[in-house]
Image (tube, rainbow, N blue to C red; front, top):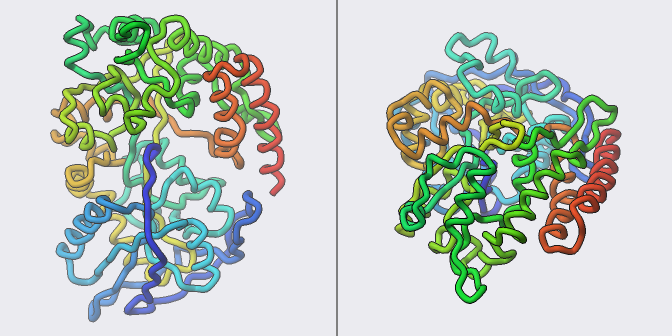
Length: 446
């Protein structure tokens, strides 16, 4: 999910009960991330193995989902195992899974399926980590890639080749406290753009003797700048240059920071660090009226007995309504021994809408299948229908090499200095641009 990524424990390598065939071929491209293990051999999906009618094929799925999510995954896998008797699949949690996957490929001991954070595809596809799925899709009438949200498919595509099938989607929208809104006389439907969001946040803010006791709107996450700038009519990366360059040091970027400054330092709807005393989530503690969050928090907020509702993304001054789409897909690693069996399992989960719906009921994760999203479970739910509607205007983060470091190492640290009042907006974006362009230039030649 774009949102919260999972935990884990040690490595479990399970040798398949039947070896059906080794996959050979060539990987695409070279490593774009120095210091990682490179894999020289890729997989050709046209040379998959066949599922035996005599014995059960044992599959292992790796993933980073831990804690309570292990039981959610195991429930879904048990449903698959019970649906037929040719394939049996189990789940193994992995810590540092991406690097372990490269190591496993190099030693010819790989899992059969991986629950994959789609955002990492452009980093690991050039390292030969995945089996290309284009031939499997082309030769299989039961799967239509247009059934999945296009940005999710795009995120699993690198250099024109498909490396996974989208499984889940997620994004952030506005959560609001219904009780606080009623007390302040604020109509949630009135919040449609930045101006109306600001007006509501001001009304919802409570200070006692100058001390903030109820924040009107949470401004804790500078990492959401990538969403705000699109609403302001800007973008994060300029793909028209060679190599790509950052494109956030613009009027749109300055407009975002000016809006943040207005809310925090003029309207005083939020104080820096306000939520630190509430476990980092003031909304869950009943101290914040409006916050951005994703579907992964639904059960947690319900358990906290918060009377909440949700609102779609506000439109920015450009009129744009945008959101960042995250989520997971299912991939078959390079050199996987049971390609055909893995493919059958992946199709069961991703192409049969009822299975996507059932997993949503188990886990709260929204399906990447547009057909599954039409199910009454989503359409008739006042919360889930807003999330589903957001997928129509959601996009993905840039896939250019080095982008994640541009955000994590260059931009966000400068934004944090800005909101703390240590530097100006102009300096924050200028410094981040210099550092970010250097990162992109270095990544382009690796």
